[in-house]
Image (cartoon, rainbow, N blue to C red; front, side):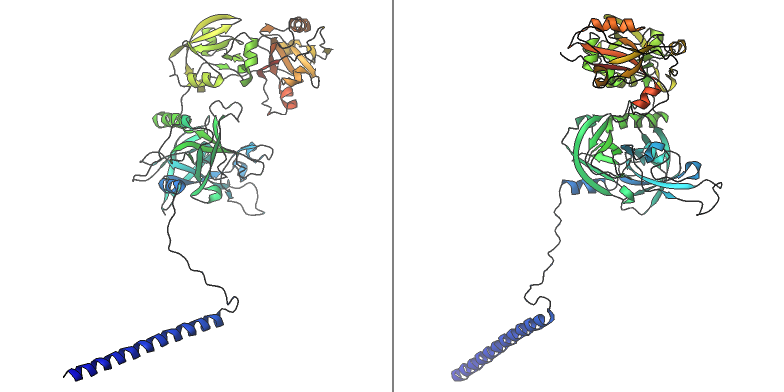
Length: 534
């Protein structure tokens, strides 16, 4: 029995060994055959090892999370408008938008004209044009902030969300041209995901900035950069546009979209680019969110933005340190003009008064004055602290609606050909030629005085501070000018290193020679500088 068991075990062991050997042989043969077959099939590079694709593992970062967070809140806006004169355009209907010499451009998406075919008569039904932009949802009920120039003149507005196939109709709630802001609402009975708003005053130069929009119609495009500057004033006369500048790439179609911080909070509304080519050159501008919120809240309450005003005008040069120093103050805003029927005139304010405070609180500059007056409720009163010819005075002024106040002036063409070169004795020379005003010209000037500048010498002090041919000088350092002798007298009291401020009426002729945008109307400005040393 034992012998039988032993023989059976030996037989089982032999069988197992034989099967193992056979399996190893088959495996080796298969590998050799596979390698030979692979080498025969891989004729281009027989000694190269094929690549393999690894398992998909999302890396993820702050920008990834930000893009996903904003995905349900940023919208693409398609607008249908009637082209003026039946002629479609790429950048809208503003004449300056198509001017290649205009560095600063508002931006739309690619226009798509419709209507008449080639060779059709020009006088037919108005042509339609489509334009696109971006917006972002700020309320769960479908309220959206975008730019006014995106929806201005819109006949139909359609809104589309990323990853949502539905195309929603929308309508305008209200607009504000001062800030180029518009509020529209989606016509749908459902709730939406709003963005998170940030306090734009916290923005610092060098912070990360992210723009989301639909440049050239490419929806949900994300670009990143940094904050390049704050408080950029790039539109003369636009008192409520002090932009955040960024180098995050923004292009036509980004208009109205959000500018975000690294947390995904909205800090601005993308509004404008500086470009020589029509595309992004790394200089984009966004309206700060604090300004946008102020306009938005007025629009949803009243359908429009209401701002306070007192009926005065000034220019940035009126707050330059040397100009104020020449007037004997170290802060404030010198007035260029006072609207005759405005609240400031009714209270007793005059041109050349310097507003140095409001209700006893100092006024730092023009932006400070505008901000505080515009935010003051209409029909309420404030006390303006004023410096008039070195004397401190207080005036109680009732705030009125800005939309009700208009300020216009006019100076006629020169008709008196008398010309004289101003060249006073002493160390100080302005470098200007003068003539007297004609009676007709004098009657058009509020103060009924002034001397007409016939020429400005090259490399002179007058040229350095920006004086132009055809300017009218009405005062120097608050001292009225009515003749050549007045200027000589004032000039002789000055010495090198003194601060000098000229009150000037800039005529349309001077505007053209200065290569600035001619308004067709005269402008009261303040030119100032420090007289050069010997």
